[in-house]
Image (cartoon, rainbow, N blue to C red; front, side, top):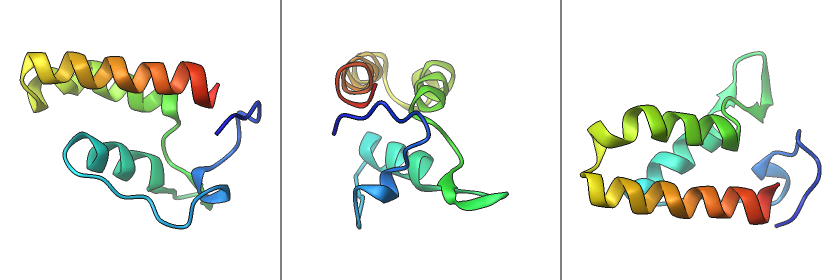
Length: 81
């Protein structure tokens, strides 16, 4: 998925999004509706990265956290941006 639309929502591209562990957490963060506009997500991909930077080390062991954040950042930088 490549988009230059910073306001694009995953709901515009996918009918179902799911995951386990890291994928489940990312799915929850990216699909939670915004209270002021339920058609928009509450969190942006950049905010998900910030969430992982802040809470990732306490949620996952250090090795897994570093791998997860590296993969997510690559996905965000090269596919979504």
